[in-house]
Length: 292
Ligand code: G1P
Image (cartoon, rainbow, N blue to C red; front, side, top):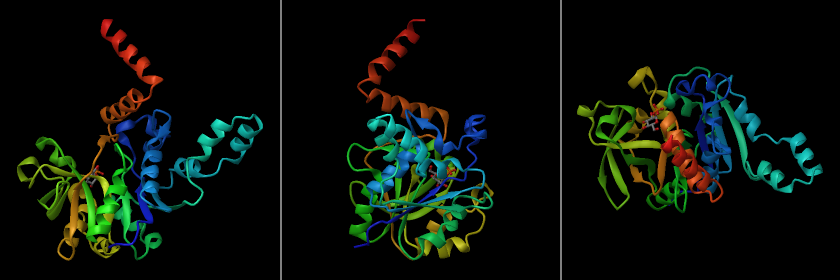
């Protein structure tokens, strides 16, 4: 049994070049899917999994995320005075009262592994989660992070979320070689960052959810530059496998890769089609587009 998950790290220092020019001023994680920014979905998932300390690894240009989670006194007072209780509730529900945010700067963009290492002073000596907000996961019931925390607590192991990807796409992901132990979980034998399809051990790819022991920080301290000239979290996990069990977990839910336009549009459409007010309008818009 592992202790409950309390801390989740959100690496949010990326430049978001796929969404330029919007990302000249809008942090990629602040791009909305319907009316909520991407980071909100990630935070909700972490809080549902039990996290009360959210650690954002950011860069010195990205103030919007801190502003977003800060209390907006003036706005709240105006909404309260205008009797707009429903809107006030929406503004306040961004972050439950028991949850605190900590912001850590990543001085240089040296890779995901380096970003996670920057959170070490706040995480300390306990197991923690990592969520990449680009990967928006919609689950029918329990969120993906909570599913992972439940698995970790029964197995006392690290867990990474995985899903099958097209074999041609292995070069975009960390890819695992794993031995199944149940319907959704497998014991990882080997993991490699962004292998070419002909070198990939499988097409089972890591998606942006990790539950890791604090030991990963020691390993990250000495992780050398890897794929893409960056310090890779995947390489430190490969080291960890020599000492401890790490499970690959096929989460229940649908992932949208909102790090690219098609994924962001897909997530937006999926949410819109689940919204009783929006769904008929979206269908109508698509039908009339088809006629023109
Ligand atoms: C990162 C990780 C990779 C993982 C991916 C999931 O890559 O390094 O192992 O498969 O996230 O989204 P990035 O997308 O930052 O290049």
